[in-house]
Image 1 (cartoon, rainbow, N blue to C red):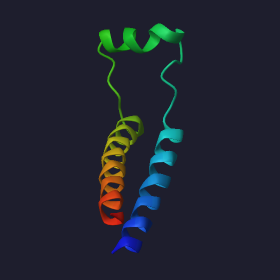
Image 2: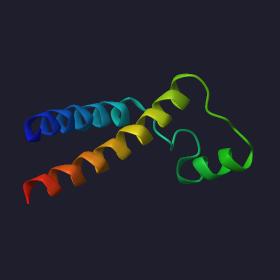
Image 3: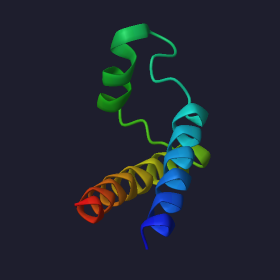
Length: 75
């Protein structure tokens, strides 16, 4: 059980790193105020950006869950 959870944790970790690296930078354009200005103007993410954003959230939750699981099994 511990070995399977470790393998899953490593796969989730690598997947999270890859999805974060593949996302486009948020500061393209106007620099620091770009993200806030685009959010106020109602710019929506489409296609790959939206998919990567959702996948990042899912993988981050899976990372936390597997981390807690590994900690509990080590005791």
